[in-house]
Amino acid sequence: LRRRTSAGGTQDRRQNNHGFARPPAAAKRNFVERAGVKSEAVVRSIREYALNIPEKRKLRDIQEANVKYLSGWDQLKQTRNKSWKKFLDETKELSSYLELWRNDIHSIEGITPFILPFSISVCVRFAQKMYTMAQSTSVQMSIHCPDKGFLEMTSLFYGYYRIDMVHFSAIKYNLPLAYLLTTLVYLSLSLIWIVKRSVEGFKQSFVREEDPFQSYCNKIFAGWDFCITDPNASRLKHSSLKYELKTDLEEERLRQKKARRTTEEKLRIYCLRIFLNIFVLALLSGCFYSIYRATIYSQENISNMTFEGNLFVQYLPSIVITLANFIAPLFFSYIIKFEEYSPAFEIRLTLMRCVFVRLANIGVLLFSLGNRIVCANEKCKACGYNYELYPCWESRVGQEMYKLMIFDFIIIFAVAVFVDFPRKLLVTYCSCKPIQWCGLQKFQIPENVLEIVYGQTICWIGTFYSPLLPAIATIKYFIVFYIKKISLMHTCRPSKKSVRASSSNFFFLAVLLIGLILAFIPLGLSMTRIRSSKACGPFVNFNSSWDVVPRTIRGFPTALQKVLNGIASEAFAVPFFMVICLIMFYFIALAGAYKRVVDQLREQLVMESRDKQFLIRKLTEAQKRS
Image 1 (cartoon, rainbow, N blue to C red):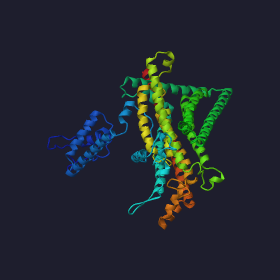
Image 2 (cartoon, rainbow, N blue to C red):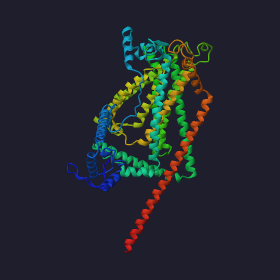
Image 3 (cartoon, rainbow, N blue to C red):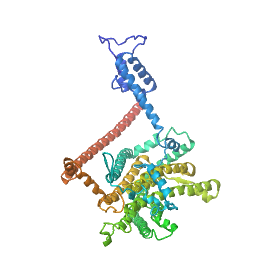
Image 4 (spheres, one colour):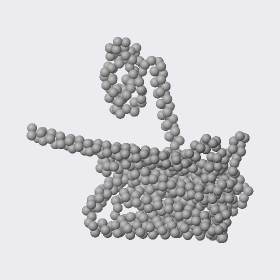
C-alpha cells in the first residue's frame, strides 16, 4: 500500500472528499509492517496474510482508503492486476474440473492408485487400420494370436513401418530417424519426470523421518483430519492412526529388544535369516527357470498345434509369469514373520522382494528371447540373427510385450469379477464362520501400485517394438482405474495397515525408476548390438537401429559435424565428467553443511526447552517460598 503525503510532509490525518478519516501514518505503518507487507505499493489478496479476521478487515480498510489517494495510472494498474489475478484464479478453478478422475478421487478419499500411463501415439490410425484389415481379411478368431493374425501386419507392431523416406513438396521426412528419436524422447521425458518427482519425495521423506519423536508428536497432536464427516472414513482414520501408533511402539520395543540381545540370540537370528534368504533365492531360481523353459517351449512349438493348443502355447510365458507374480509374494509374506524385523522394515523388504521378482521375470523373458534371436550357429552369421525362426524379430518381441499387457489386464478383470465379487456375496449372505472369518478382500495399496509399475515397465520395453503399445496401456489403465474403484467401493475393505505417504511415494517412484532403467538395458542392446531385421521395419538398410544417427549427421554441414563429433569424443567427455563430479561433490558438501546446521538448531531448541523448564521450576520454587 502507498500513501501520498502532503507537500510539507507533516499532516498525519487528512479528510477525503467523502469524509473518511485516514488512520495515523505511524500506526498504519506499524500495522502494515507487522502484517508482513513488504511494500505498500503491492496489493495482495487479504487471504494470503497470516492475520486474524479483525486484522484482515483493518488491512482491507487501509487498502480501500489508500486507493483514493493513488494517481489515475496507479489506480488503473492496481485494477488491472486485481482483474488479472481474479481471472487466473477462476481459470485455475475451472481447469480443476477438467482434471482426470477428480470427482472419483474425492469419492475414494485419497485411496488412489499410482498411475503413470504415457501415450505417444494416436489410437485413431490404429482403429482405422484394424477396420480396413478386418474388411479384407477373414478374422477367424485370430485376433488372439498375433503371430498369425491380421494384427501382425498393422501399425501396432514394428514390421509395419517399412518406408525409408517420405518426400513432401520441399521436405524429406526421415522415418527411421523419427522412429528412433520418438522412442528416445519418450523414455527421456519419462526419466526426467520420475527423477524430478523422486527428488521431491526424497526431500519430504528425509525431513519427516529424520526425527522419530517429531513424527510421534505429529500423530498425537496433528494426526486427525477435521474435514472428515463420513462415519466410515472416521473409523478408518481412527484405525489407521491406531495402527501407526502401535507400529511406532512396536518398533521402539524391537529396538530395545535388539539392544538386549545376547550373542546366542544374534547368532540364531542371523542363521535363520540366512536360511530363509537361501529359500527365497531357491524360489526365485525356480520361477526364473520355469519362465525360461516356458519361453523356449513356446517359441519352439508355436505353430505345430491346433488353434486352441497354439493359443495356450503362445500365452504360456505370460501365464507362467503371472503365476510366479502371484505365488512368490505369498511365500514372501509368510516367511517375513520369522525374520524378526520391525513392522515398517517388514513391509519394505516384502515389497522389495515382490518388485524384484516382477521385474526379474520380465528380464528372464527378454533373456530367453535374446538367446533364441542371437544364436552362435553358422546359419546366423549371414544376417547376424536367427532369420529362419525370426525373420522379423522386433515384431516377435513386440508381440510378447503385447501379450503380457493383454494378459495382465485379463487377470485384473478376472480377479475383480470372479474372485472379489463372489467373495462379497458369500460374506454378505452366508453366515458360516469360516467365510465370515475370511471376510472381504483387503485393498492393499502397495500391491496395486506394484501391478501398475509392472504394467508400465512392460509398456516402456515394448514401445520400440510396438509403437502403439503406450496408447493401449493408456486405455487399459483408464479401464483398470474404474475396475479398481468399483472393487474398492463395493467388494473390498480398506486395509488397516496404513502406508506412510512420505516414504511410500519415494519408494514407488524409485521402483518406477528401476523399471525404466530395466527398459533402457534391452532397448540399448537391441538398438546398438543386435542386427536389424532384413525383412521388415524401417531399419532394413542399416546394420543396427543406431546407425541411422551417424548417417544423418554425415548429411549435416561440416561445421555442425565437427561440433557433434567433438561432443561425442573423449576429449569432451572426460572434462565434462570431471566438471559434473566437482559439481556433485560441491552439492554433497553443501548438503552436509546444511545438515550440521539443522542438527545445531535442533540442539539449540532442546537447550532452550530445558532452560524454560529450569526457569519454570525456579519460578515455582520462589512462589512456594513466598
